[in-house]
Length: 283
Image 1 (cartoon, one colour):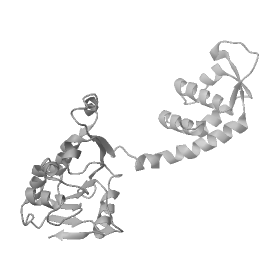
Image 2 (cartoon, rainbow, N blue to C red):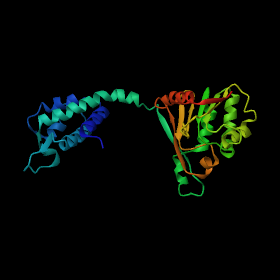
Image 3 (cartoon, rainbow, N blue to C red):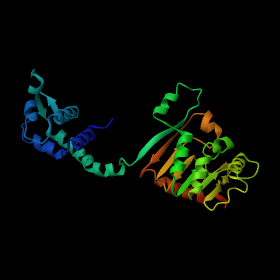
Image 4 (cartoon, rainbow, N blue to C red):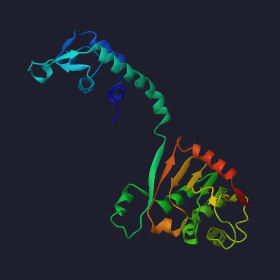
């Protein structure tokens, strides 16, 4: 829950009033204030906003009801604690002043959609597809919408899983999109390599816009375990748990997120650094 100063700042932002105006308004009253006089004051603050502000100021201790005055709600007498009000509204002013920059940083251009693989046998979970995007469908869509580059980081690949998205990947290649795949075990006889050969041909797809990277191992552990996709310099990214395997596409519960906007863009630079610590196998 936000603190009281944050609540005031957000309320002021919504009502388009400055926290300083609240203090200026109370300066017109004596220490004991009749609630109806606040509502009828000549300030620019709307009645509904005043009701919320007064409730917050009461909880924050800046306004206290005068005891022993049993009156109708709007005839209530309140004691105004100027010191507590100034402290509360000063903090609210700092937050209020920062809100425009915060809104720019977390602007609506950042969009996300949850992705999931839900096995068909778990029919009680299938209703979540009303809100979620199916994992292989989302990956196919992402490849189909790629215009320049597509990066794919997955540790595990098998034929059935890769085949789920292969037509979209081949379509992107035909459009001239640069496809870059980082995975493990790119030697003959290993599942990842064999799946790529079966889908893309042997030798692996003699196209200049197809690039294949292998993760390096340190102390017996592969450097990358990430499952990340990025298209067009971070215009859209996928971050989740799914590999390019049949299990991840059909049989096991997987969850991830497709993210677009400024908050997604740094992922592309991160991928570039990961690739710089990998071995290029093709071309």
